[in-house]
Image (cartoon, rainbow, N blue to C red):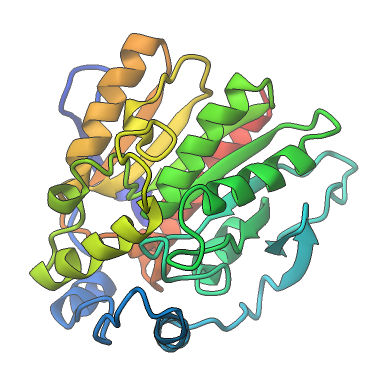
Length: 317
């Protein structure tokens, strides 16, 4: 039995409303939380100095870790001229059935992170799903719409034969995943599920709404998000999918800490989706922190197992 089987769940908005888990932190999570440090330990360089940003990105990503998983290996391939890391079963499973494919967009405020940094997430999802993790072009070298274009290019390539995919992402990658899903559905591309882990959904309110676990995180994140937006309008629905028409989207799962400011955006998105006739399963985790999914914790294992089960159920319909 997993820890999630032991969690009691309260419905805060009536039947079908956001689920708030009633649980105590695991000893591992409590120990980790007690010694947490700012997620970006190096001072932000001049973001107009591309060489300095490149060095900063490399140092930060290396500190976060870019090692492959010994149990679920990743293969670097190019899809639609975009670099990707692919994990999990091939297109056909041992029993001859189709393997479900998820296109994943990593977090890191767009500027930081990589498909390799995201291996702790994609490896666990890759135990049962085929994960295509996109190494999208990053700002400030490549502002909007480069990252979104890359995710969409991979999506179009993988669905060219009519096979459905799911899209997923964490933090800023959640905005990319949802924006790509909205565009794909409007273009008739078969998207069967969307999974958003602690997603950023609205750039207009991002300065206040981003994770406030520490003031340093907010101060670091704002300029990174501005690098992505560049000269575009942050209220553009393709940048802030909170403002997009959600009509036609498949089922969406959102996992986010109950207490972080981004949860307000998730709640608002769910209200918009309800009006559009779209089901969003909003799973709120008390006492957890932004993108806990990256860590070797029972709560991360449980959350990702549930996300994989959600995707499998949607793609089997």
